[in-house]
Amino acid sequence: MSTPIEDYAVLSNCRSAALVSSAGSVDWLCLPRYDSGSMFGALLGDRSHGSWSLRPADADARSTRRYDGDTFVLVTRWETSTGVAEVHDAMPVDDGDSLVRRVVGISGEVDFVSEVRLRFDYARAVPWVRQVGRDGEHAILAVAGPDAVVLRGPRLIAVDTAHLARWTTAAGENVDSVLSWGPSWRPAPGPFDVDAALQRTRDWWAEWAGRVQSAGSHAAHVTRSLLVLRALTHAETGGIVAAATTSLPEAFGGARNWDYRYVWLRDAALTLAAYIDHGYLDAARRWRDWLLRAIAGDPADVQIMYGIAGERDLPEREIDSLPGYEGAAPVRIGNAAVGQYQADVIGEVMVALEAARQAGVEETSFSWALQRALLDQLTHWVDRPDNGIWEMRGDPHFFTHSRAMVWAAFDRGIRAVEEAGQDGDVATWRALRDRVRDDIDRRGVHTGGWFTQHFDTDEVDASLLILPQVGFCAPDDPRMLATVARMEETLMPDGWLLRYRTTGVDGLAGDEHPFLACTFWLVEQYARSGRRDDAVALMRRATAVANDLGLLSEEYDPVSGRQVGNTPQALSHLALVGAADALDATAPPTD
Image 1: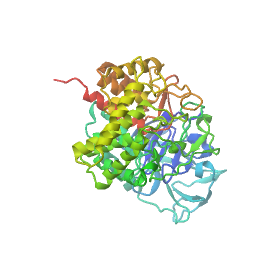
Image 2: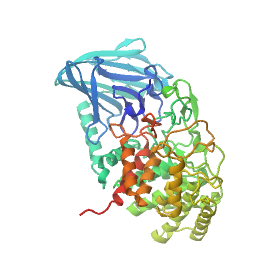
Image 3: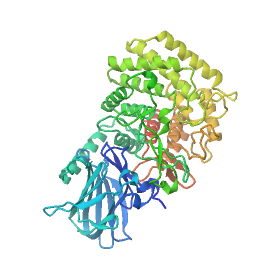
Image 4: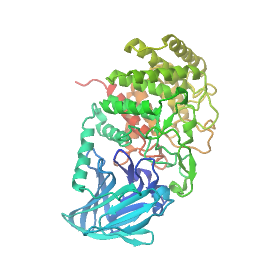
């Protein structure tokens, strides 16, 4: 049985991320970037695919865990029959590509076991390992292909293809294990001051969290969610990955397993809005700079997603070296959606950049020229069907959400000219904006009064909840109220909102579970349309499925009570922030 997805904590140095179970096992780690090949891949298999277990030898030891304040320093407290000790796990923010695991003796004595199985390149390469410690230091060096890892700490002894260390930690003692990655052709990474590295890491995260503005009545959830978004934002490039993992299934045992370790323009644009709303204009500028670099060139070549540094070539392939989470296969690397046309993306970008401009991020001649070029390209694509926000792998359609975002793109372009003094072909943009609105009014509304998923169906889709968020209609527009009623009738069999009914339009076999971001969008819609009691109740249920550390994956299975899909998921966390903001904005006045 695999470790439940909600059991994992995430560590981050804002270049990569590790997942650590409550049992003390690092089961996912890719270095040096989020999208590098895994060296610990047990998440998608078992411990033979790479893991690092560090825990008491006592099988009956009990653990509790927490983050050290508003940081990503994980503190796991172990209680045994002989004593109490803590493990402090962290990825230092400025000491190379490293993972620190410090055992701290609290009381009595605790026997510990460290068991390391290094498997590079998604468990396709078992490294050669040799002892390299000197002058009393214990260290091993593991090398395979382009990767090299040095692990310093208690003496590790080879046992088959694993390495084990055993020791006893007494009260007041610290025992450090430090894993450091480097290219195999360079000298092995050297040691560093662990005390200083941990303190700098704590201070860095705490300072960043301390700048959160207007956290509101759901401060703990909002702050942790913003921290997750920062943990998924690459420190150097500014690219914001959708999640830290690949191929965690949307349905247990199913084939809907995708690689989310890339930068979707849509998700990143929505993250930008959350950053702006809570005072992080520096993050907004950094992401805009990433955007300008990534999509520079012919606007006709704009993609829906890119690599962390703006790479365009992200071919999807299946690998058999990892069997998949609970056998959910295939495991995929890369993402074929990179070649899709999704008509909403330019609208998402234009909406986000307008928000940045209004918040005080200065427009440059280059940044506006890019937006103008995107709009000019959209004039050629305005009548082109697309694959939609959910990356349908069936035939293209005129998805109503996509059409509304085309409307939003032209609307923001017009505003930039009329309100911010930019230049552009306003007459053309206004004519197309009005034509797209008329198109939706005529073809995207069912005779029953609700907006439809696309122009050729009576189905609804949770993405329609975005329409009032971008100003296409008011939250209490009769069509939106009818749409929500239809969603409640057809998309909420267990009281949680599905993205859509899997009736074949997505071109995939199997089903999926309710999408957490959609449920938070519904909270926002309830709040802004006068259904505050429903909003509060749904928000309470939705935040309750976060794990003990406040982390959310992509989906939730209400039958088994388990998180599902890639984790931690940026879209889930930024939608939580939006829902919390809507609840605060619509709260009745207090005396």
